Amino acid sequence: MATTQVDMSTLLPFATRSEYSGDDGHLYLSRTRHEQRMCQLLNAVRDKPDWARKWRTEEIRAKWTVELRALAQQGNWTVGAILARRPEGARWWSAGRLDEIPLGPMGDANFQAVLNELDFQAEHVADAAGPDNVFAQDDAVDENVRATLAQLVADQLENVPAARLDWHPRSNNQVLDLVHPSLYPLVYGRTRILKSAMDKLDDWSQFLGQGEPLRKPAGVMHAASNLGYSSGAFTSDRFQWLPSVFHVAADGAVTIGSYINNLRPDMHGALYPLLARVFEAALPLLENVVSRIQAPVPLRIEPDPYSWYGEGPHWSDREARDAWYNTRMPAIPNPPERFDQHSAIVPPFSLRDRSLKVITKLANIQLSPANPKYPGGSWHIEGMLNESIIATAIYYWDVENITESKLQFRSGVQAPTYEQSDDRGIQYAYALYNNGPLVQNRGFITARQGRLVAFPNLYQHQVAPFELADPTRSGHRKIIAFFLVDPISPLGQEVVTTAQVPPQQAEWIADVWAQDPTFPLTEKLPREVLDMIVEKMDVTMTRKEAMALRLELMDERTDFVTQNDVSVFGGAQFSLCEH
Image 1 (cartoon, rainbow, N blue to C red):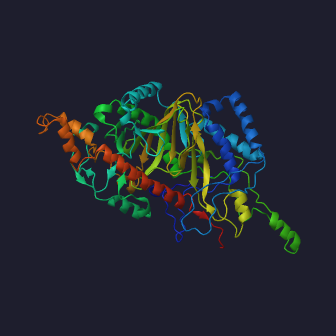
Image 2 (cartoon, rainbow, N blue to C red):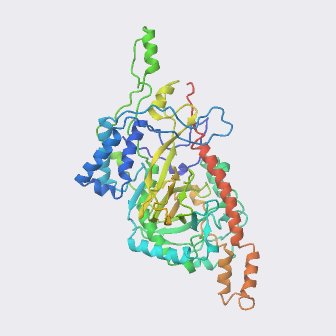
Image 3 (spheres, one colour):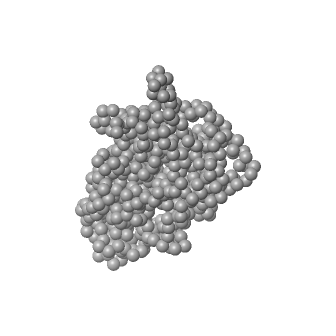
């Protein structure tokens, strides 16, 4: 079956739902439970390390097929409850299913379709990861790069005085922020913007204190309005994360063209080319993700809700007809016998020969015998309309002494078509139910050392709980995350970068001016006095101020995550209305 090309200019994870236009704001189609079960088997194989190469080995393929068949034969399989937030003021709403009818053993046709898809992808789409539209590669980054990165991060970012360690607020001293975009963000009405962007990374110290304050995100709000977004609900009028400019050559080589916020070029310059190498490795995965945003994996099973019960007894036999009506179950068709190779491959959307806007984050989850269990994160997407993030790449570069850590995914979906009042059919076929959330789980990937994964920001994701494997020793999970700003739409074009914003860190500015013999006050003032002067300037931000503003930003984004979770992932309800 052919894939559908989608206008990327509106593919951001924010609600555009309109009761009048019929636009529910969702890209993904509802998938039957039978297909979701197939996806579970696909996920089980595609999450394995180096799965495609191993699947092509006859002995391993046979072994894994036996394991898959055992999963497929389980007779009590269910999707399970989908938990979502209750929309404010909702009169009729349900939080999750408790009475889902289990599916019996998987049919042979469905099982064979799973094997056919794995056979094809192992040859042609080897970086397909656990869930559909997600891509991953194990050991994509050269081990020498990873080892050098580990040493430099330890020396320059981790092994600092305890007072300088930046434990993420409200994380129970488990999440250590090394480089985080919420610290020293763009603050509307305060942060200064240059009229002409800096040309290269080395210019970061040449324009300190220059520019004019950007009063409000007028460009973003205007672009959002033109694209049909309710921009006020999903746009911050206070903050924006600051992306850097990543120049990507035609051959995929990457150079970082403006400073990474909170990673000082003169002190941490050796990290820049290493981060560029990691992004180079992520680039093909991100290109595949963007391609699949344009053309998502199509449905494998397409039932007809208007004919899935058959004829039933004739109306003249009222008793038999009523008995049939009260017990009937939909007949869900099998997937096509021939695997659709045409829709299984989409040409990568080239991100090469471009200057991309990329937000960079480095963070560790660190556990100790005294603090041994990570409770898991919240379901969320990244950023707001201000950042226009379209995809995320995560590199798990150091994983030590923890139990299996999973990154889980789910998405909002379009309401399926249905026959009037067919509660039973929709519940059985899709595990969707009247007044329940239009949300379906997508699967997971396992966070393994050396794994690089990329996924669309149309998926909500959540870090599942994990703990120390050996409770007598410390353990950790360290990541580098790249958030790709939409490279196409007018929204992405309005996102301000560090090429336009001179550093705001008071400490950086004072250091540069103190070392500049041409600066008028360098030789006349003690450093302590210079620090005090710089901290009082309206072009700078002290660390204390930055940390206070981060709490405000976090509160704002927590409210946004809740609102987005309701409107896109919970409040978009399936309603069996009359029609």
